[in-house]
Image (tube, rainbow, N blue to C red; front, side, top):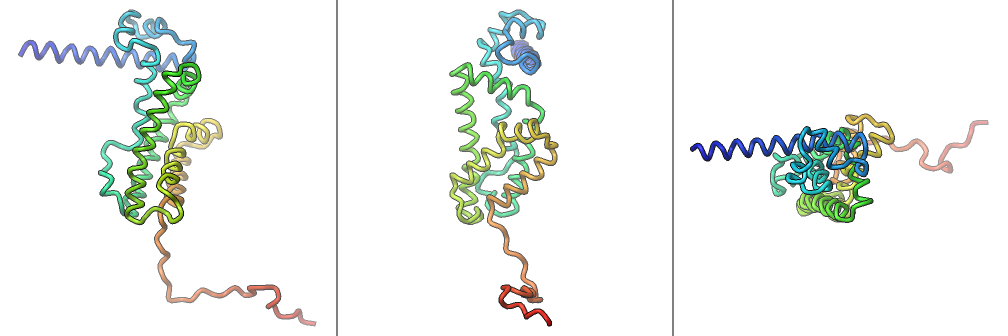
Length: 231
């Protein structure tokens, strides 16, 4: 029992150390940028030795990857399996949840996303990792779009690939940054607009309810049918 207690305590201490490093690194990346932040600076900010930083993460790109892991979990953890999301209402609910999650994450992380793009330009290994993570997000979304297509609720004329491209791009960090940070859209406004837009673009729209009242025809369908002007 004592050994198990010591093991649990070490795990808790390790997790605390890891989180302290990530908090310090994020603050520095956002303030100074990726290139200008060193492992020594992270150690000083976290109030621990540089050796501890290297033991925990080994490299600076590994620190940034750990901070960014959350941005590639596009779907909420409690979403139902894809097979249960094949009716119109549930698909619309999924879109709203995905949009809300991604907008909340990205709108509060402009600085760390800028650090990521800077790292991708200067570090090929980091760039490859970012590309793989974004590809995983694309395939995650594809599984849902494929379900909608099989159920006949994907909008007519859209392929699964095209619809996945739209969902992946518009809920990605770059698009969200462009609208919120660069164009000044309020996060809530962008999330509401994006969820509604994606619903209209990606999902087959339910037919309008029929009415017993016939629609009034246009008064003059063509100028040639108009009565002559009175003398």
